[in-house]
Image 1 (cartoon, rainbow, N blue to C red):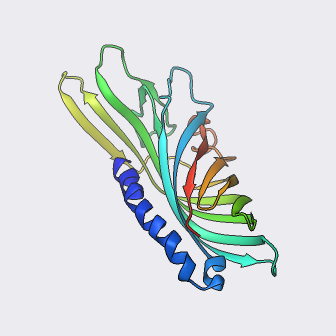
Image 2 (image 1 turned 90 degrees about the vertical axis):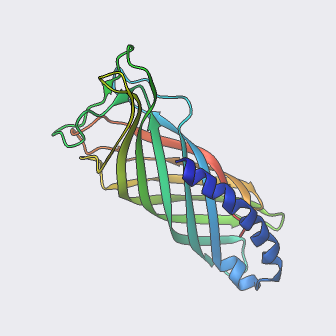
Image 3 (image 1 turned 120 degrees about the vertical axis):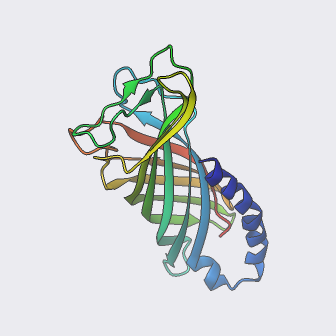
Amino acid sequence: MKKIILSLLCILPVLAFSQEKNKILSETTVRRVSVGAEIYQDFWLKWPQGMNVRAINLGAGGFVMYNVPFGESPVSFSIGVGIGCHNLYSNTTINNIHADTITFTPIPDSIDYKKSKLGLTYLDFPLELRVVTKDKIRFSVGVKLGYLLDAKTKYKGDNAEGFESTVKYRKVEHVDKFRFGPTIRFGYDWVQVVGYYSVTQVFEKGLGPEVSPFSVGITFMPF
């Protein structure tokens, strides 16, 4: 996750340069293509009993979208593709990622650990209806359909023998292959506040806890 955030921070100067470059791009190109990077906070809903979710659960993503303007109006329809990464930090671990039903087990108080998380990565296909005024005020509403690329866990802390270790598992079972939910975005010029609510649960029904994320963050979109 740190690598993703650092990569996005490295991209920001490029986005700023792109903002200046927009001035020499054709108006058609600027109106037709949007590129953005996002950093957001995941608020997790309906976590299971015994789980304490960490207050800060940072996620990140990026996207490219193609815009279809409605004539000369400020309204356009946009469709695109992107990547979304979400993290659930808690005081629990998944003991068996291949179990018939996925359960989160609380880490005993006697165990010293630094972090335990579930990480999810999706290939997203966003659809948006956008309004961009002459004053560079931007507003959009839409939906996002995602396909699961990776589901993994990471634990860093003491093991049963009392030695510090880092344990990673990939391909957690019973994570729903698809996600879907509404999005909203509002801001000025290329900095905007974004929100996403997942209508679908992370795990397949009856095969895991009914957790789902509500994400709020910032989008950097030079054009």
